[in-house]
Image 1 (cartoon, rainbow, N blue to C red):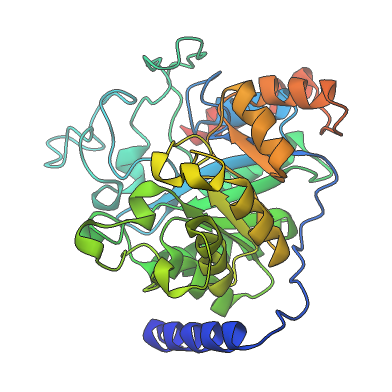
Image 2 (cartoon, rainbow, N blue to C red):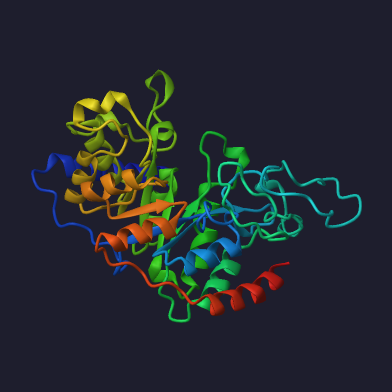
Length: 370
C-alpha cells in the first residue's frame, strides 16, 4: 500500500473517531512491562560514551528496563546504531581509509547515508568524552555497531531475553536527502526486528510520524511510539508540520493543546506518546504547568489507551513530577540514578545484570565488531 493511501485511511479514521460519541476499547500495548520503565537513553550517555556496545553494557549493569537507541542506514543499506545524521567530530575520530586514496576520506563530517558500513567501521567513536557529560566513561576504539551486532551482544548477556527495546528511526522529513527514506527505514528495520528473539519486546519510535503509519501498516502488532517536541509540533507561519504525517494539531477537539497532541498521536495509532519532558513553554501556564508535557496530556493519552514516556529527563525533581502526573516511564541519560530513586519510592525496578557476564560478552563482541 502506498503511503498517500495510508495517510488517507488514517485521516478517515480520525474523522470517524471524533464523530463518534464513544472511543471504543483501548488498544493494549503488547510489551509486558513488569517493572517501572527506566529507559537508558543511547545506553545511558551520562555515564558512558553514547550508542556504543559499552554504553549498552552499562545500561544492563545499571538495571535499565529498556535500552533506547537510534538507527541510521548506510549507503550500502546496513542498519547502524547511531543518533546523528552525520559523523560529528565531537564524538568520533578518523583512523584510516578503507582503501588507499579513498575519495570519501576523511569520513568525519559525512552523512551516514553517504558512507558504507566498511567506512563507518574505521571510526573511533569511543575516545571522546562529551563536554556536557563529564562523567562519561570513554572506551577508546569503540566502533559504531549494526543493529544486529547490538542484538547479538545483548543476547549474549541476556540469555532469557528480558530486556526491552525502544528503537528510533533517525529520519528528517525537512531534509530528505540527508537520510534514507521512510520505506527503507521501515522495511530494513522490520526485517531485523522479526528475525530477532526480541521482536515481542521492541517499541518502534520516531519523530517522523510517517514512519509510524508505515510500520503499523506493515506490522500492526509492533508497538509504536510517537515522539514530539516543540520543534516538531509547531512550524513557522502556521504551516503544516512535516513531522506529523500531515496532521494539524488544531484540527483535534482538545480542548487544550496538550490534549490535542495526545489525540493526534492516537490518530496515527501510536501505542505510546513520548513528548519532551523538560522543555518549558510559558504559553501553557494556564493549564497548570509550564512544561510541554502536562498532566492533561498524560491523562488524555491514558484515556485513549496510550502510555506516556517522556524524554530525556535527568533531574530527579522533574522525574518525580512526571511520575506523580502518571508517566509510565522515563527516558534518561542516567538510568542508574532514576532506577535508584524509583526503587526508593517503592516502585518495582528491573534487576541488574551481573558485571562478569556482561563484560565477558562485551570483550568478545567488541573484538568481533572491528
